[in-house]
Image (cartoon, rainbow over all chains, first blue to last red; front, side, top):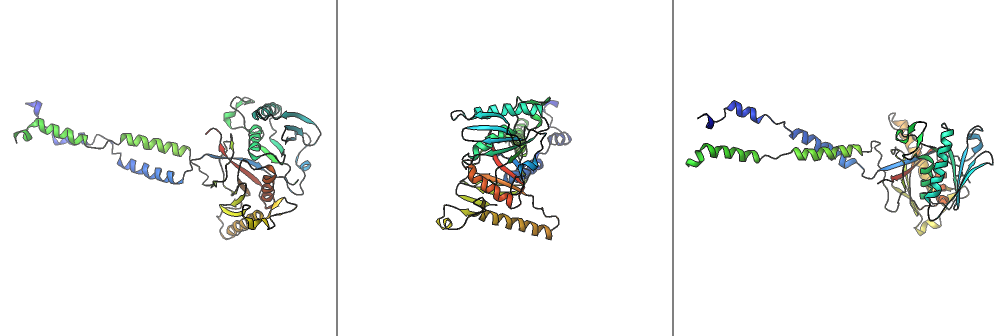
Amino acid sequence: MGKYRLPSHRRRAAQEQEGINLVPMVDSIFNVLFFLLMTTTFISIYEIKSPIPLVSSEKIDEKIEKDKLNLLLEINTTELVLRNALEDKIFKRFARDITNPTLALNELHQFLFALKKDHPKEDMIIINPDSTIDYNFIVQVMDAVRELSKDDVLGGETSSKKTLLFSNIIFGNLSE
Amino acid sequence: MSRNRSIRFRNRKKIESNNGELNITSLLDILSFLLISLLANYNYSGQVVNIPGEIKIPRSNSQEAQKSGVAIQVSMQKIWVEDKLILDLSNEENTDKIIYDEGGRRVLPLYSELMRLKDEISAIKKQVDKAEDFSGRANLVVDEKMKYEDLKKILYTCASAGFQEFKFLVLDKNL
């Protein structure tokens, strides 16, 4: 007899209230989602900053001090020349290979990384690209000069801490 | 008739009505996933830069988020400032005009527009205290094939118009 007994009203009401009402939550998520979809940009655009351009009467010599590295990178069609901006001292030349353009950039990066290890406070470099150099290659050079690769470790800090190699890149030949 | 009244049939009816409800748990999962991915990739700077179809910007490893500034878009033939076309070298009418000054280093139409924009921002700042001041940042959207000879003129013009910081906009290399 008891097997076929109908559940009481109280028991049925308790059963109905068991689940959480998700409808308001779905409503609010839809609202936020709609707002985000309308305002978001699906292409990730980042920036490379280059502060304080040297234009007009200001001279390079006034900006840089003698006890620093005073790095100046000349970008030519055949090679990259890293030198001291004040003295006539060339740190190293990196020959550009047309078949493998990243080779010179990797060498430059490794050399600058070694320099940075010895001079951790240095963060400025002046670049002088040749007039025939295209913008894409300049950006690649800026990457090699600025960004640390995953394997690079500077003074116990890994590149995951967003430290940069030489972050202050200045275009030195704008007024020429 | 007797079948409808039977207890067995009543229970079956109840089961059928429960199955008719929409199960929104999986929908909620998808929505939450979308929400998280959109929030993770959202650009909080509020700056939306339009990249004209004629411009292909380079790719870089830089992970610095884009900040607000005056957008200067430069293709091989055209220059825009905040999406407003200010110079079109493909138009033959412009070939007779004087485009450069200061020994070919400064682009006149670009300089005039930047100065006008700078004055406009300063005038708004004078009238409204809470208005954003002139940042001095130039967000440069430049075609990857552009030679430094031409890029230098753009940089020089920006610098002579009072801009102090260049921001070269790039795409993520890993995407």
